Image (tube, rainbow over all chains, first blue to last red; front, side, top):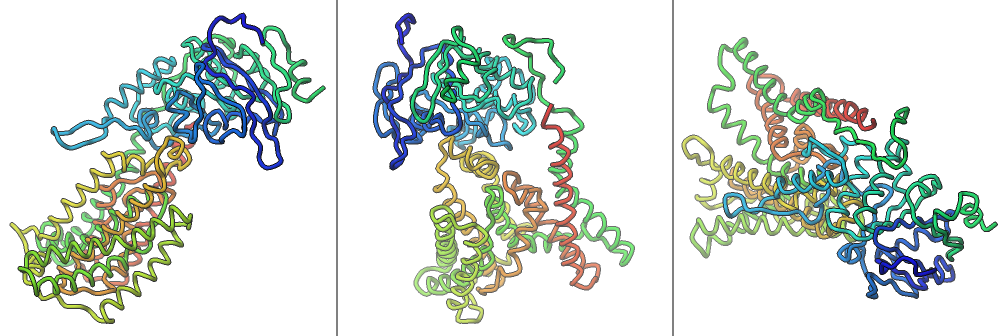
Amino acid sequence: MNSQEQTAPLLEVRNLSKHFGAVRALNDFSMVVRPGEVVALAGDNGAGKTTLIKAISGVFQPTGGEILLRGQPVSFSTPQEAREKGIETIYQDLALADNLSIGANIFLGREPMRKAFGFLPVLDRKAMAVAAKQTMGRLDFHVSRLDAPVSNFSGGQRQAVAIGRAVYWDAQILIMDEPTAALGVPEQRKVISLIHQLKAQGRGVIFISHNLQDIFAVSDRIVVLRRGVQAGERKISETNHDEVVKLMVGG
Amino acid sequence: MTSTSSSGGTHVAPQADHGDPARTWIARIADGRAWLFLAGLIICFEVWSRLAFGATFVLNPFNVQSIAIFAVAPLLLATGQTFVIISGGIDLSLGFIMGLAAVVAAHATNMAGAAIPLPLAMLAGILAAVIVAGVPGVINGLLISRLRIPPFIGTLGMFGVARGAAYLLAGGTTVPVQNSWFALLGNGKFHGVPYLVMITAVFVVVMHYILSQTRFGQHNYAIGANVQAASRAGIDIKGHILRLYVLSAMCAGLGGALYAARFTAGAAQAGEPLLLDSVAAVVIGGASLFGGSGTIFGTVAGALVIAVIQYGLVFVNVEPFWQFIAVGLVIIISVLIDQAQRRFSGARQDE
């Protein structure tokens, strides 16, 4: 690692380990994510990508090592704590409630209330719709029917809703687990352009994908994991598909 | 797949949503199908009754009152059942929780009546019924949320337990209530509207508010659609499920108390035939048994459909066994409409 980027890291992982009994799923792993940077995590199945993101997002407690957020050591006992600190994970299976509107999904679990007739607390659907419209607008997705359930929208749009939720709650680090895996080609392209926008807004993105084409289209750096250890780290501008594949399979 | 007009980096202006008017139309009809059924049924019975007896069916206030009274008990069970079914569960114990509550209401009213004034004794009886009904609800909720027993099995077990408890408490017979206020509550009217119907109407509006306007209701829909998403959003699933089954049991508790008022007696078998009616009302009302959809007002229409079929067939002098066939057909047609609508909207999910 060199220090040619002047910006302080948003997220830093130092010597992180996670052992399940005798299995060393993750061993002495380090990486940094800077503001406005997209870091791709690559590796074969079982290389430890999922363990790593679960340790960062508070699902697992790491066995050793530390996580620093803007230079401050943090530890999360639940995913909610990680989310409150601005680390949001966007899961492959989207984690949306299909029967609810975009606004309701953005606010799921933290719904705004208002007082009807001055005393009766009711859900503030208008505020949710307004926030949904603004947030989706920031991602350049313009939806007209804000009361429609998200099941009415396409895969890419739903991915945008999941990302929009993270953006609305001001996540600084977005961990995206295979965000393009279940999508058709035009939709994949939309998601890639969404990631570009997140980057332009100065957020850090950890992008997990099997698709090297997507990784090369959007990432600044690539970190390759193999059997729980870091097998290599390259700047995208200084590497190519062949080298990454070699790192992944250990050639 | 062929739209290659834009290359990797530039943003592809996304299409707006798929909300074309035709789909919303069909969705609206499907959502309101219970009210359409109700209107259709009333017209059928009206025509039938005029042709057969030259008398009106629906314009006769006595008929309307009777249907409303008929619908009260199944509707109270069905409001609780609506919440449970939307969450993706089912509560089979409601019928006997209602019976248990009816017996408790009768006993408690009688006992309290010996010590305190009758109107207060009546309130004490109703309160006792609702609270005692909450106990099996708590057990249901704990079984399902903490011990991960499927709702169908957990509440089936509670069905048996509540049934036995109700018969034991009633001593195997019906328990008469000695309280004139309680009898008045069950049979009195105000300007032609029975008190029972008024209480139920207020209760239904409150339940509609809880389902459609509160976080509890919103989370209930989310859990029914995608438990994992709800849990990742930070919703306390276990706590919610617990409160949910307590709520549905307490609805049955109120149903039992009002049963005791109407018949001035508590009987363990009070809710026995009503359990499946309550599920039917919810399904006819537009909820999906897979969870995630349904409304209280849909369920109201569903309960009224059943009540109109049952009362109407008696009114036009058809053998009562046809009721079962008619209700069964309405359930099947209702689910078919739901599936047709799902298939239609499902086909439009991809670009």
